[in-house]
Amino acid sequence: MPIRRNVIGMLPAPGLKCPECVAAGITSTVRTISMAAERIEYEQGADPTNPDEDREWVRGWELLYDAQGAYHIHDPIEYVFEYSCDNDPPHYFSEIRQNPCPQGDYP
Image 1: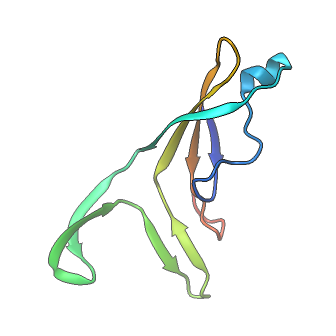
Image 2 (image 1 turned 90 degrees about the vertical axis):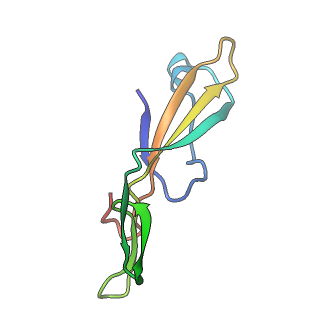
C-alpha cells in the first residue's frame, strides 16, 4: 500500500525511510526509481481570457487570490513516486503526493 503525503512542491519530503527496513530495525539508502502524475482529468472549452479560442486544462486546478488577498493553489493531480532501498534484496515501495494549498483549504 502506498504511503500518502501532502507535500508542498515536488522535492522529497524529509524523513523518508524504507518501511520494511524500519520494521526490521536496519538502515538503508532510498532511491527514487520513478515519478508519474496520476488521476488527471482534462476539460475542453472556451478560454475565459479569449472567448474566441478553445483550450484544454486540468479539471479542478486553479490558482487564485481570495477576497482577503491570500494566494491559493488547488492542484487535483496526484503524483506517484516509486522507491527502492539498497538492501539485498531491495524493498520497493511507493508514495502518493498531492500539493496542498498554502491556505490549508485543499485538498
